Length: 604
Image 1 (cartoon, one colour):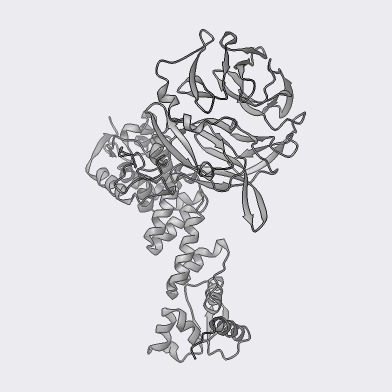
Image 2 (spheres, rainbow, N blue to C red):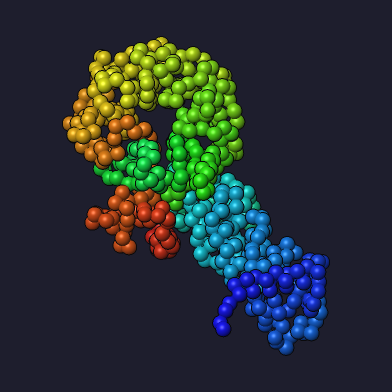
């Protein structure tokens, strides 16, 4: 007979753990920070090479009944012993570093791996510097690069954290050497280093010439250079800069069009959205969070993207819906969870105004609204909309107001006065409005409405709507208003079976809509996404091409796209939204900083 009891090992562990809890048949006591842990030597030795060596060698601990363990916290030891006796690793987020340190000392590879994975997966602006310093102390190169990459992706925000000022010179240098810093200007990098110096100026000012070798002189403003010179302690001091002639990754933003559509029968459109750079005729993709159901997206003034809506997961026959808010990480081409909205909303009006994000409508009655503060990750309610809106509406911002447009009428919210008021109604009540702001006015069209319609323009100076283009009408099944590179375009598609596509450019000086001479560069890549009766929006945002995905769905190992053209996707694996290892390029930057430099004298 040859049979196996699959429950045997579980039963043995469970019984041993019960013996430990009752201190029965234990043969050693671990003393950790004044607390005693009765244990079984055989269990400890079976899962820890550290204890196995201790108990099988000629050390004094072999015969000792009590053994003092140093450099391990009481909570970490309790967690480790629970794992040893149950095979289950459970700990609180604020204890992961202590548990990982204990696991490294006791040589528990599984615990080390899982705690490191957890820390890599839960990096944020408040903890990433601490994780970086911890990984450096442990010599964990994978965790070091992961935390360094995350800091690069949120550099300006992380540089304001108190922990940033605790960095060692070598770690600070490794950060400011990075080519992939997501920052708007080289001055931001310099100012972060200056804050680090001023935190302990007496000791750190001597490091200024060393740090200067990481600054890219060509991109530093004259005012910031003067500030650096003023900090030099001697008049003959030389500040040597890097002469790298390319900007950081965050400075390589290009205005793009994001085509957002909801197709409930095609999961592909829930995973990616196309980004298009009309200036170069290049297409990319941006990843989307999974399981979305009715979402809205907005771009802020500093190029941050936020997505709000509802996620949907299935548990057996039941559907579980959750209210969600995400912020886009440009470097990682991924979305990070933020504080969920107070009220569940589907396809709300999501707008940005003066440092805040507003979610308008989308609730069960389409009459509530709330405001999000990115600086503290908090939502607060704002006054209700005076009258419930229909499900089809749009919201835009102009000056200090939010305008909500629907067929029932138009309302505006004053961010200064924190109140709603009635606004002028459109001449033709829109069934499915789409609106954009352009040069101080609102332009709105009736998307999916009558077969022939006009684009109406609202001027806040006189509070009046009028038909733009001298009343010119357009026939379409699908149409999108698209601000692009300082111009306003209208794209129309008529008949989905044999589509007729037209592009019009608005001429403000003559109040007319004209067909541009070369429309293909804007129109061609968008057409496949335009199908009648699907909800489609166009968002203009400044994106980083090298961080985006390949519309062909893959990038080969040589960094070329699937169609044989050279790809911009140096930093991103487009098929998975993961960032490739760029440590080689960072090492090259260090060499360039050392070998190629420009010198400034204080007395220039």
